[in-house]
Length: 500
Image 1: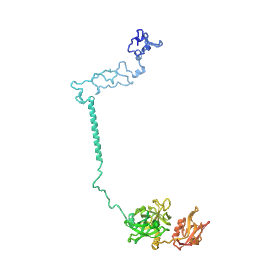
Image 2: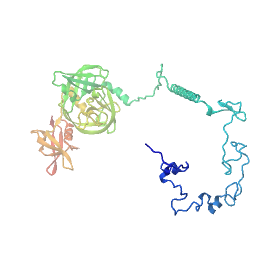
Image 3: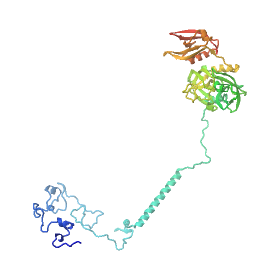
Image 4: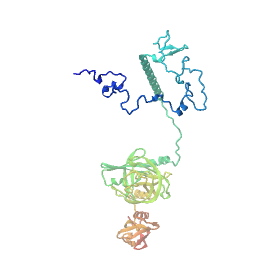
């Protein structure tokens, strides 16, 4: 149990509350003894010997710079040479005229507390509207009740939202137009299209009726090609590889579809695998006949139009130019007995599978070639799309073969009697003889294996394809001059061509 402190205990002494050491709970241990009135250390200066720091005069330099000009002067010091500032005589509007001094401008003014707010006896302190000294009515914002202020805020928000929504919907309705417009009529221009004679449309209009689509079926297989009507009594010129699949196949059928969508069954008149040409016959008199031109008059750069049924799309027209002439192209393919080399007309008109047998016409609408092959990355004639290189049999050669097929069903070709391959020695190219057929014109002329043929007549030979094309330009029985290289020197011989 706690004991009461005795009177002799120093901790029981009553001290003044202002002494912080005694106000602290542990003041008894650290407080100044009652008999000591000065510092604990005898070496410290006594209070009587110390000067009150608050009464020390300011340094003379600061007193001259910032002190009053003289004791009791109402204002502070000014810069040397400056004059007394002009005092404002008219009190500010916000300062009461009965105020003694402006405490913000006069450092000598005393700080006093004013009285509370005073109201006129006839004025209600709780009223929202008050009247000032000049009789003007003013709203006392600070006295508005909280509930009324919240109500006003909510009303303002609702009003603003309603106004914004109305503006949004009105603007949307104004910007939108009806989705449907009954009785709408679009503008039209009459006479803006010009189809002059010789235009692509004019050529297509004249040639399309003479170009047909050929459908070949055998069993579950089938294919589509094109053809050109060359006689009004039903003769159609096309490629051999288009119809060769139907030969010797009892289940095969041939049908020709015309530009007016009518169709007729067709029969094969004759085929020539060495030129990749064939002639069909339909029993439909009065057909539109194509005009056959002359391929010898064609030059590189002439505009041309290709017409046919690429990919089975009947009556397709594409256009381009003649990009090369006398291009030797070997024709062969799976499913056909075609083994030909043609001196082709090269064109950049789009030619695709199904264009074979169709017409390549010039700017006058005359047929200058029979579309036959397309270039592919697997070689000419490879299946694929057009890459801007197509080949056509010149119409001069096609006309001659077509006439023979219509007349006899067969075509005759000249033959030399050699098999050759393309070779080069780094300086000159040629066709090297691999073998010579016994009793052939080549054997009679004295050609031997490994001889390199470099010329036929006036034509230079640089490949085996060019050798075939050069020989095919002659007829059986013609005599030709052959230039060839044997060993280190060149020789020439005469040969009388035979029949293939």
